[in-house]
Image 1: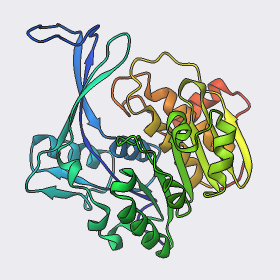
Image 2 (image 1 turned 135 degrees about the horizontal axis):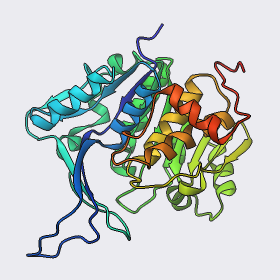
Image 3 (image 1 turned 120 degrees about the vertical axis):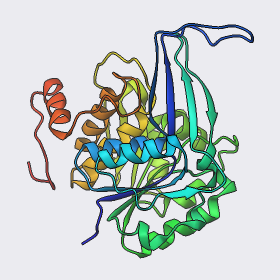
Length: 319
């Protein structure tokens, strides 16, 4: 019996969201906005908070600074029932912070990575991490950390845990094909449509999923406002997004991941997991801050039933 349903490895920082700014200020210019909100950010942290809201036992593994922001993130995690004992404290860096401007055209960011730069897969305490029956890994950076990422995944698989990964954007622009070798280690592999097309060279979601399925039996591609698609054991599924009014798309993909992984860990099939993922993504964008708009499991299922009257709750494959 594992202590946690899931252990999440990755980044945590503070997100400052600038609300109502129609432009990013020019040098020497001052712009007044409607509001500035502060929330826990970082893809892994948003995913963790969303998963905990759905009632799973979750632990977070990352690095924070010995500062006000680091203490705030720890407090928010603890208040959400997230175990923080695997979080390390940096002696050299401060907790990261990202400032998001939300103009009408597109978002812009100013980011200080801070302690997130210190997270290295080769430094993980794998005995601690394998206390979860499932481990979600983030922070893959292509060739720059492929070998330690692969080694950590192999060791965790040997411990009998299931693994998922959201590969994220390749900032190097290489889109190295060694990603396919990495996929073989994971039970579920997730990415967005743009990332998938960069790795596969295809321009169709189904073609990309078929290629991924040769390396990972369960692959998911997020399609933003068009929903998401998945392929599990050779069978493909696709679900449209739920119609909502979006005010902030920060963390929508991470919240989708939480809903989808909740379905998977609860024994649901891929089609039902897509409903949970899409619902979490939809509710996320209705509020500023990555996971602030998400309700608990009862609220999430009420939202799905509202949009799909025939929706049947599933637990461990039972209707």
